[in-house]
Each structure stands twice: as structure tokens, then as C-alpha cells.
Image (cartoon, rainbow, N blue to C red):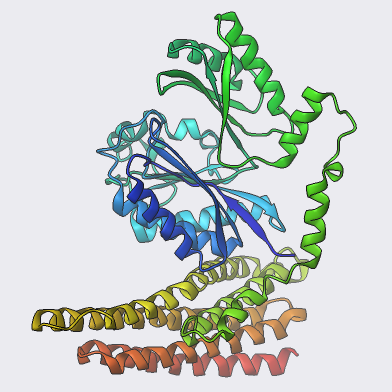
Length: 508
């Protein structure tokens, strides 16, 4: 069964479509084909865009890092204005387990992504909900208190506002809140009044924090001149959406108002709609398997071609991309996946309690490398396509010829940088495979060995691409630096692989 995780990042932009499009494009490219965008919902009044992303844990993690980086480059919180509370360009990033993924896995994803965002992008990161490191940070509202304006003044001076990762200062991108939680329904109800005070009173009556319904967060806003009760339902299985609807309806009636329409932000689980149908239609015997689309979907899933063949089919197609560089990254990602598997098969076993801390570290590093290498699959193809685009530039005049030559040089440099990163990551995975082979569950030692050989193959494929691009550029100093580093990585890999082979002979 393919693992699936959902993420619903919220970006503080909706009034500049070109910025939203750039962030969405970065998410798509960063996922390397392992993450799919299901929905993009923008609200100009809130000046906020919510994206629903689903995919493998590694793919979604890689996509999110790319999206956060793009948002940080394009959104300045000093200039941002909107109805919705916010502290960051990428304001909140919740991971939600869907299939074959536990809440613990999502917590690990949140913490790994948070550490990387803080380290590489210099953005303060706070962990919330199930991933929170402090009880008071489980509630997002506590972290966002005072919004960006308060945070930039307090982050360096108040210890309770120190981030979990990253610097104790905020730049134009603000801070980002990353966490793990169950499925949340973002649900807005509009009232037939322009008086926002009514929406605020209704919201206060229904939200749990003020003594209302459990698992309901609510606030009142004025949107397009109409009062809006904006809600997050954090556990629809325990407080159904129909119950919330009726509570808002009753409270609005106390103020002489009615609900005029409802609005979903993002997606909703079918089970929530089935609950609502049971409530309003009094269909007490309604179950999911009575819905014909569900039965048809089960048939389709059984007959569908396995997801694992998709990349192989594209690799075999008569196109220049994906090619050898992407295949090298794919091999590296598989190697990292196997290392993670060995670590997971080792953790929690009494026989290996002495290496528990070491294997936990191996697992965290392997999962991060898997995400990076997964992202490199698409990045390698995009880099090659950029080279081809540069060659298509006009050269009718001397100026055009010079511009074309500069563009080709720049494209070749980038096309070498991607496999160069793959080569470094492959050697890092190889080192982790050596630890897994030596200290991991002996029943999985052959898997650790397979990881080592796949990592070595990834290095070889990446090195071929680096050398090919190095031969094509005019900057020989840069080219020679690459070639020297590749030679060093290959020498290091030979040492590690020799040690792995010795371990395999001893432990098998």
C-alpha cells in the first residue's frame, strides 16, 4: 500500500495571482512527481491562499520546502495586510496522516522540515498541535498572538517566544508554524448582515475556547461587506459539521439573522458529508459502502496500474527527460528509503536497545536525504530542459549571440549543480547504509547492503552527468573544482563500500 500524507500549507498572499502561481509551481516542481496539488483556495479579503497537497511523505516534504522558499522570496510581511491572523509568508504547515502513515510519522516530518527551514532558510519555526514541544504551543492561536507585528518585537527578548528552530529574529518572511494534526475542516458561514459584531458574538458562542462546542475554533470577520463566521473544525468525528451548523443558526437567530450561505476552504472528508446526510435526512442506516461512487472507486483501485511503474514508464519513453541524472537521483532516493526501512525495523526491538539512539539518528538523516533526492528527480529534468531552452535563444546579432552564450553557460552550470548535490547525498546515504548494515536488525542486513549498492550507483550516474556538464562550460576553474570534488567522493565511496562488503560477509 502506497503511503499518503496530506499537507495544507497556508500562504499569506491572495491579491497577487502571479505570486500564488509561482508558489504553486514551486510546490509542484519540488515534489518531484511524488506530490499532487488537489486544491488551491484564495481569499482576497483574508489575503491568504490555502493549498491542499497529497503525496508520499518524502515527496510532500520536498514540495513544502520548495514552496516555503519561494514564498519567502516573494512575500514581505511588512507590506502584507489582510483579515486573517498571520505571522509568516508561509504561515502554517500542518501534516495530516492519510494512508499507511501514523501521527508519529507526521510529527517526524514536521520536525525534520522545521529544522531544515530554520537552518537553510533562516526562518524561525514553531512546532504546534501534535508536534508541539511545549503544551502552550499546541494551540496555534497562542503562537500567533499579536501576529507578525508583535512577534518581530518580542522574539529576541521574551524566552517564551523563542522558536523551536531557526534564528531569534524575523525578516520579511516572518516565521512559520509547522505541525501534525488530524483532518481539519475549514468552514465559513455567512450571515445576512453587514455588522461584523454579530459574527463575532456568534463565533464566541460556538467556539470551545469561550465555552462553546468542543473541537470548534471560530472568529468573526467582515468579507465583501457581509458578516462571516469563520471556523476550523478540528475533529468532525466528535463534533459533526451538522451540529456546528445548527449551533450557528440558533445563535444567529438570537440576533435576528439567518445563514445565507456556507463555504468550504480546501477539501472535506466524505465521512463528514455522510454524517451531515445522516443528520438532516435521518438516514440512520447510511454507511459509506452504500454510496455507489465508493464502490466504483474500490474497483478502480484494485484494477489500477501500480504507482511504482509511473517513473519507469517515463524513463523508457523516447524523450530526453527524464534521463540518467534523474535515474541517479531515483536510485539514491531508493537507497535512502531502504536505510530508513532498516532503521525502522531496528527501533523498538529489545535486542537492539543499545543502538536505539544511533538508529534514530540514521532514520532522521535517511528520511531527509530521501526527500532531497526525490526532489532532485524533477530538478534534474528541469535543469536539462533549461539548457535546451538556452540553445533555442536567437543569435542573429552579436548582442543576441553573446546573450545566448551567457545563458547556455549559466544553464550548464545549474545542470551540473543538481547532480553534484545528488552525488554528495548519495555518499551520505552510503555512509548511513554502512551503519545500518553494521548495527541494524540482522534480518535486514541484505537490505542495508542493497541500499549501499544503490547509493554507489547513484553516485556513478550523477558523476557522469557532472563530468558531461563540466566539459561543456567555459569556466574551467569551476569545472575543475567539480571534477576534484567528484574524484574525492568516489574515493570516499570506495572505502565505505569496502567496509559494507566486509560487514555483509560477517553478518550474513
